[in-house]
Image (tube, rainbow, N blue to C red; front, top):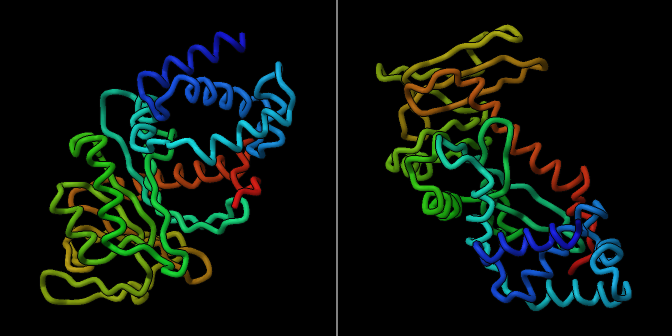
Length: 278
């Protein structure tokens, strides 16, 4: 059973060569099987399940050598991950910037996930300078250009992001590319209307649970629609999206599949914060 599964994974890796040599491809197949068995990413735990024919210390050395020496093509990996999704139909891209403690390294990740329905997986990512804090428009555009290149613009049905992902240059780029989007806004935004009137969201006087939709208003120089919901504790949920998109509250809720993806990677068997890598 283990040998047959390893052969199947190796065959897939030969079609999408994330690593080039056959020896590396066989190692990756064994590593994936070890991940399933150990439900842990710590090398010492994985070494117990990698190759029963050799000593555990040798298995652990082999794992260390792979991560130290092997060159991995992450664009090819993205193509391999895309093969897990339906070949037809629109896909959803979600932007996020999680901060992780990966082993002994604190990393600031700008990441785009791709999904459909309740399924979401990491597509491509870049590491930001930890001192830079939030991403900027140049970072986001560069990242999403990879997604457009891999998928093609017509397959991208929606781009979603949280409050960080606003700004005139960024939103204009999305519009110019013809990409539908839905972004959460900070509550301090003023909403200009075509009449010249400006509305402060905090002054709407909404009761908890009450919603309001504005079909045509301006945010960061771009025109679109805004949906507002009053939350408990005098808080507001504010979303800005391409003009004409319906069911904005339900569409934006799809972004939570991205948060669930991160929860799976950090826990629930993956435990990506557990290694002691430097």
